[in-house]
Image (cartoon, rainbow, N blue to C red; front, side, top):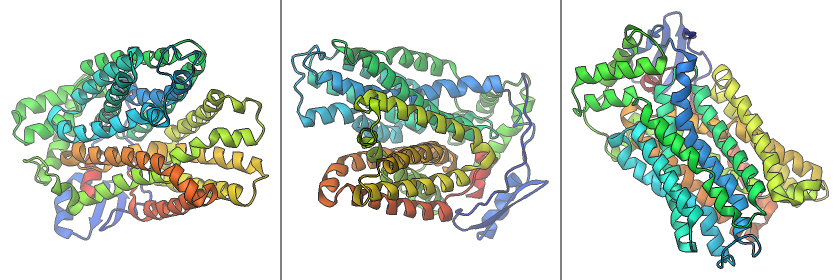
Length: 517
């Protein structure tokens, strides 16, 4: 097993830290200077040294602690892809295999968005159970919810049972999308943390592509929609069994001990053993320094009691909330669900021979999303978060104004719409897609991470639901061209937000990010 020493922390631009003026990098490590001198002085001991031995790791040991949580993202993406084909199959008088295939628009909407509203419920549940159960057990519960929801949906004897199954599956989505980035962030080595969390987005897109492929295989099979939803059940089982086998997050264990929920010396020993498994090191001495650093950061701030709801929106905790919720909000309200909604229409207008087949169009876009997400995964820990966000969102802005021009002024230039569509999809997967989830898993302080991340996930799904619900009425009111122009203006606002508010976290441990905030 190859061990990898930590690189020097990044000296990239760190605008966006609120009252922080600058971060300097020297041979001694990272030094943070803030307007609050007393607080800065109390945190400098942590920031002045980078724990070289503690950040040694084995690549093979880091695979499974990423893989099983990432299956939660793959199952989320699979649901999006499979549902696009399942609705076609379910509403077909020939292939539905049911007597209730003649669904109204409201009923179809419940099938399509049922998992989204379930995810909202899951996000609310995550707020109350995240710190109580821990990241690992939350993912186990998510896998159970996935499994029951998929089985109920696939075996549904009537429409009501199907909707219940969709909601239960959605609760699994809400829990998994909350706990997975948090578990990966807290267990991954800082050198590859960005790559692994971004790779979770890759798994979401891979799941979408898998769902599109399965949908195309069963769309003309009697009761094919049942097979589409049932196909996810083996992955649910693998995820659940895998999470039962993985160790708990050492950071969560130490947080519980400092809050009086366990014996600190005993918990420290357990956390060290867990970290040894996660890093693949034979000697606990190699990871004990990092355990001590986590405890040291916990001692700098009042960690002895659980965070209240109001505390999340106060002082320096508010900074993390603004960064995290702002990113996932702009991720959705820059039109991501709406642009993809128009994908088939745009490709049809360009005369693509396969564009009449919605499943083939979806597979084409899924492949593009997968490739661009793979590029983001490879470069996120080299280039940093801010360059990808600024570059990608700039491309999103250009593509939205191009789409607006197509629908208002250049209706004969179908090639322009295709270019704009592909540019949007590619730039989204380079920026908001993976980096949004990455940043919300990094910026929240340990004591507030579970609850803060649940609020951010809730904002993500609520924004998605809002854009999806409001798109058609707004389109009828102001027209498609002006609507895309509005999305473009929002994208410009998101660029301003990223430039002035969002920090660079490349190369920093979670404790260093927390201290810098």
